[in-house]
Image 1 (cartoon, helix red, strand yellow):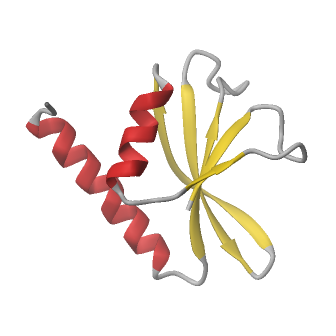
Image 2: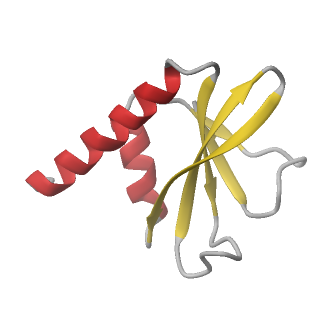
Length: 96
């Protein structure tokens, strides 16, 4: 069971995602396994895919547990994409 605070936080992230979806491009969340700038947590960063490029935004989520981030993206009805061999070593998955 989620708390009211968690539900509000999820709604805020969903709203940011929707706002990005109406920008000139497609929102893409990239989930990283303890990246160098945040070595103590899993981090998901919002990027905008547009015209063959990926533009990072200032929006990010962090958690001690990977499944917490996955729950947020699942609640937003996003689709999980497995990492590829071409991805950075810290990339775990993508969510569209």
